Image 1 (cartoon, rainbow, N blue to C red):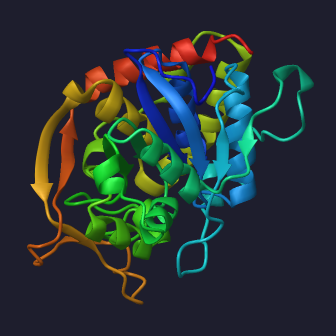
Image 2: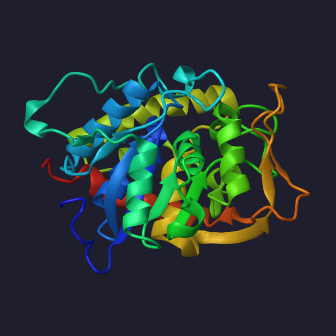
Length: 328
């Protein structure tokens, strides 16, 4: 599929923005193999791991499902103003848990890494196809904020921009009130919220409605790729057992993909809020979303609950198809 060819009439053009750790990996697999989506490109941002790990993981995952045709654009290597912090304890040293996607498998072909940096890649696509492209951001918002700073109208020229990030009422997973993607680059989150560049947020309030267990993954078809997914998620489950006392894992990113784009009917509660992101130097507050008093600021829709059982079933069905996809 040529990334510049017109999309199939019923396929939704999508750009994923990822910081490919374990849950991004599963979201990528599902997005690349869902017939309703025309994956126009994937942009990489540093977050869960450093940018070179993100780019390598992303390219290899796409090749594993025969989607080396999807362009991968390398974006921000660090937040707008802060030092990068990564999450090796959560995602493993290279972002994919107990499995490391190093070494070349020549049979898998190559991925088309584009020389255009992520912010310009986003800008080129949305200006070429105004009102058509959906953007789903699954990491820190650095690439999107850079696009905004370059004068790209993400608010007005996209079909929709959705972000998996932040938390409203749920306890944070990085600080008491802060979620990881927001805490890594609070300035980027604030830039996007202030510009109205995010239309919808899938926060922890929604993505933590579903817990996935190793039994869920053992039920996948017994393919080489399913083994890779299980080895990655086993690491994630070990982290969540220690950090959250749950016998399973939250898969924030694929839950956000499934319930916001593929099956929006799975969102059972949604609120409209005017939000800002704390950018102070206080490490306990930076990255916290709060309701802004500035009424001129654009509002954003926030999913606060999803149907957990239907979401689990939908995600696992799609993942089963992805891990059975032929190498291309």
